[in-house]
Image (cartoon, rainbow, N blue to C red):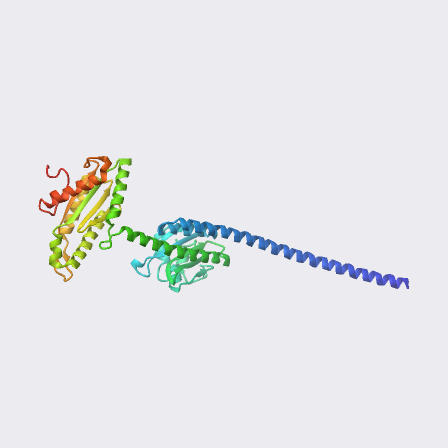
Length: 391
């Protein structure tokens, strides 16, 4: 009887021990799962914190941008900081050259940029695909994905073995396209999520900057000719003269007037006169170039501020403008031929001013004297400058 009791007790005890051991193993397994989940949550939390910091810095950098050109590199820097691809680029749509033209605005890690631009923006290129379909496109392995063969060809290869292209869209309009690539490893859904956030914010900032630049341009541009206006001319001339005093270089000024413009208006009408003003403004803009400033001074008179240009070079430029206008065949609105000439006065800082404290007014007066008192009075269609008559 005692043996049976002992045997039963031993079996019961063994059962309890095994149950406890099983519960212990289950507890260990559950603890390990909780620990793994906790580590995963910790890593995700760290990643989210890192993403928040990166996006915060991105928004701060964007807020400091005052031009679209400055913003493009901020886009790329943000992508590199957040996703860290091997290569990245942003292509911007150029509406002036047609809906299908995209140009490489900023990049990281790429060479042979002209070739890459032509490959990615071709009719079957990845950039064009994302823009036309207005959605993201992802390539996990360019060697096995046959949609975009340019990714397998140098110089795109091997940078875009794995790639994502994502359009920048604002109010259903495509502004540009991001593309990122890796030589190995691919991209995760988290990478794509971050790229979506950056793309959405970039599109909004880009559109706002474009509107800001348009408003700024309107404030300094003459609406009739597209040249800078009278106020901006004075501001920039004053600035250039201050720089010339500080660094010791010359500044030349051209004052340009269309000869007998009132007679032209009387004969052909004011609409033709407006057209002629735009035509002459284009000639002046093309000759002056982007390194100098061309402005409409008022009425039929224009001005050009030529920084770091001496008198002889300014006179040569003036002669080119005069000859181009004289030889150009202008047309009225009813297609009648209009013969046109201009008179030009030139003066240079510092040799043609009387008082350095009044450099701006003295330089304008000196150039205007050559225009009005000499070029106009000596028969028009000529370039006059101090010392010309004595020569």
